[in-house]
Image 1 (cartoon, rainbow, N blue to C red):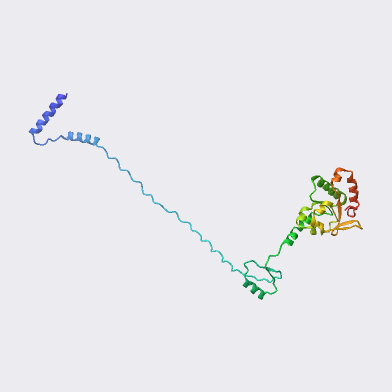
Image 2 (cartoon, rainbow, N blue to C red; image 1 turned 90 degrees about the vertical axis):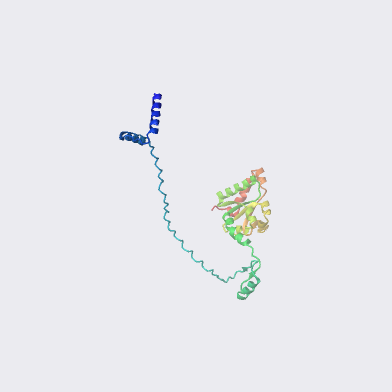
Length: 257
């Protein structure tokens, strides 16, 4: 088969050398080769279609309301008042202002130091002291727990049998110097405390008065009953009976309210 194809090719080459005229194919051959060419022809790949451009649409801006302007600040008004109370000078108070003030208001006193507020503080805390006081008030100060418990029992017994009685610590009253307010309470009729407690409170002791002829002891104008050493009653409980009789014989505890 190969030899036949080679022979055919050699004959074709010889023919082409001897004949210069072109060789035309028949109409059927042309149709055949056109069909072959069309089948083998590779269709070009379609070009990629570019996406449409993105158009950025800016969102509408919200209308910002401008805040109203702040109201104008009122101009400072200087009010000058005439006060009879003394005026206090601060270190920055100039000598010129002192001279002007002395001329325009000679009735005002100019102080170079701030007055003490000790009296005001006493007045401010006076209500605390008064609220603790009852008709019969038992004072305690530095007693040991057993003696303090005995004083509390005495206050409770007096409260049950003879009317309002209170158990009050003397330390804060002494520290704040509130004995004047303590003794000024009209409801107070009797003060009870140990004799050594009285001598441990120097500010309270200034109100102490004793009349030996009448056998009376007073704190200003309030009756005072001094208890002996409480350790005696703790050692011998039978002594409590005599103590109770002595308390019952006092004028402020003779009738029940």
